[in-house]
Image (tube, rainbow, N blue to C red; front, side, top):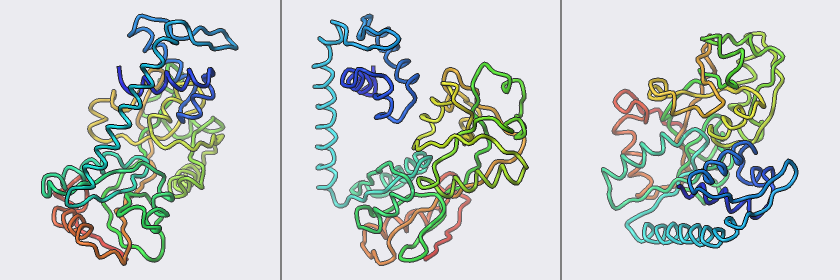
Length: 314
């Protein structure tokens, strides 16, 4: 059992509606139903009585709910205490982490931890535009974001590149029989894409990629932050969507898929995106400079640390 399971359980118990709980979790209703069913199976208990139009707490669910809420509150308290302890160390730097950047942030945090045990880097998941705004407002020390960058007031370096070179499709289904999948297979088909105001760089690159190949899908806009959430929508049969498969994921597809989804390579090279580490140009703190210098000294590509070269822009 994971804390995430208890969070799903508590939200469904609060809303008594899978759709509303899913909206608060930013996942598809089918993902909530599946998680609750898995939890019931693991516990050997029926937590909810449901019909096609109604959800109620079952007696066992009602008895477990207070304990679940206490556990979630305790976990939040531990997180708050840890934050206080980190802040009491030599330094703490908060970094806004754009969708898809978690792997790079993990590498960055590992580098800092090995070189400077008295420095804490705390990642805060948010969209790129939100991270850049928080950076400018002084709420963050760093931002790890995708294109585009603000034109003035910041310095940056490129720390990673990737292509959306795979596509997630409902499975089983006709598209799973075409490997690699030609882009033309999505002509007139529902296809997921970020709302432009949440991720303009990714949105524009995806639209341009399809247009350059003369393919016109039926765009299904979303505001999801993580790839796991997109896979849940694909599993629900909503549409297909581009995904990024890291080399380690290709060797172990279980890293990037879920039940009801097939992640397949595209025939055409997908759109390329870049990740930038960004900081305020007027931030001359020793802590920030320590971290930036560490990344530059070891190569700026966090995915390929031995091959990158510093490419700092202001």
